Length: 211
Image (tube, rainbow, N blue to C red; front, side, top):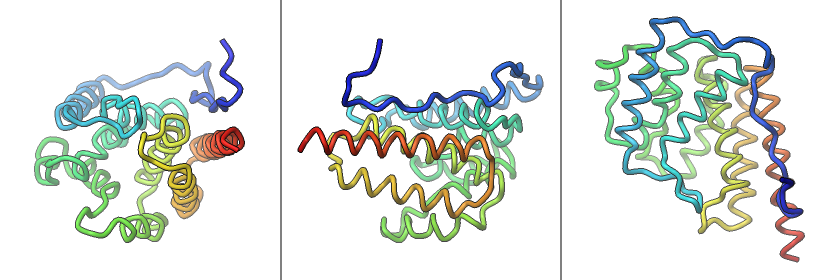
């Protein structure tokens, strides 16, 4: 079924080499299941801001999926950190608790992804742009996948109380963050660019329809 004329088709999120088998080492499976379970418990009462109010856990799962399927990333620590990337920032989980459960490396990656909620929102957003070039390569990959998922949702499944202008501003800011990350993962960078272009086309279509 084709999309209505006012809806822009967003690029499909797939592995750059679809014929390649997905392989995961046996020791990684318990780790990823533990990370998914922990994140699901911590985000249990949370919903995404979109009008359809989907469970929040959908987001970190999508981010991890983009890293694996599009980015070709198989490092279980990076995928686990993607599943856990919002637990410190958006729940009452502490770094010490994560470290005890998942170790230093995963916790360090989650901390790299976590804003300081004690700062004013504008400062937090400015810091994301300013700090992006100094993040580890692994954290920059997670950031790319995170921003891709967020841009998609803001453009195609927006929060009910977000104005057109606020959505457009978010897309511009996400582009600055990703640009500041520099060369990171060509497949993820390409998907972000495609998603951003589709999102802007969607906003332009909405504005034209409203006019």
